[in-house]
Image (cartoon, rainbow, N blue to C red):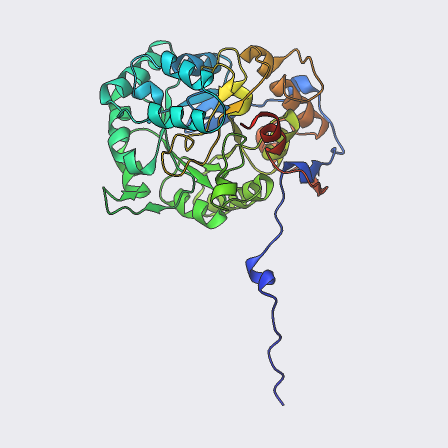
Amino acid sequence: MIEPAPVRDPADTRLRRAYGFEEIALVPGAVTVDPAEVDPATELGGFRLEIPFLAAAMDAVADADFAVRLHRHGGVAFVNLEGLYTRYEDAAPIIERVAAAESGRKAAHVLAEAYQRPVRDELIRALIMRIKAQGALAAVATTPAAAWHHAELAADAGADLFLVQSQVSSARHISTSGRVLSLADLTGGLGLPVLVGNTVSGEAAYQLMHQGAAGIFVGVGPGAACTTREVLGIGVPQVSATLEVAAARDRFERETGRYVPVVTDGGMKTGGDIAKAIASGADAVMLGSPFAGAVEAPGLGFNWGMAAPSPTLPRGTRIRIGERLPLEQILFGPAETTHGTQNLVGALRQSMASLGARTIREMHGVEMVIAPSIATEGKSWQLAGRE
């Protein structure tokens, strides 16, 4: 008699447990090192960064001046080529209107109206040249639909890093309204590194690496200024997403000998979150709201996501950051609170030292434990600042 096949619970194949920053902890190593001997430097697109911190391509976070400041501190800021700085010769009055707008629907209306003006090619060139003229890395970001046109402009203007970024990235962007974006064609035709984001899938990341991506950004909707997970229901908690993409990177390196950096993007608000992201396999982290709180940030104490200005389906919100501090203090201290939101570099050094990791790559091998919590990534920021 043939036994009937066992009935499988659909959850076994379609539903899996995933973990965020507040649900795991790092285990102290058997060996510790002197924090002074820790080197938090990393590499992205062939460029060495003294600190593994990237500023998000949000208009309230990164303009040309902020890009220069962060570069001088050892990091890099990505400027949005479809943002306010390529639509207006002087975006300051627009940002003042956004900051002064009433909460809720009024702020959303002001944002949508501000982004209706078309992007201008000459402002893209001027933006990149302004950053380069001050000796900083010119890192820029755009969406897949505009990638071909903006890539050629950016390369001609001397950009150093080119990020093709969307809510969810795949190896091939299909559109009947414009040129189909094949990453392999794009990376093969440019003289600058092409980075791609965002994904939470190891398989998608693996395909993007094979098509020539110089870096993979991880994170769909985890940040305080983005509501993609709520509006679209799409996303994976950042620890699990980073682990999966990092595993794909390691597999790709074994097969090809090429190491592709992984960047965890969003959902981090403290030094502890950053350490956990790197322990999960990230080579660098991209921060939005933490940097929007810098005195030097252009957002005047507010932040909003790239999808927030959409006139039909905004997937973001304008948030008030609260206390503003100098960028140098956010990065290097001194810390005036115990919340872990200041001296982020010092906190990372101390974490690495306590775990016995002298480099970012060594951090990828530290032990982690599951320590479940009901808290959600970014929720404390949202509850404090959502309008």
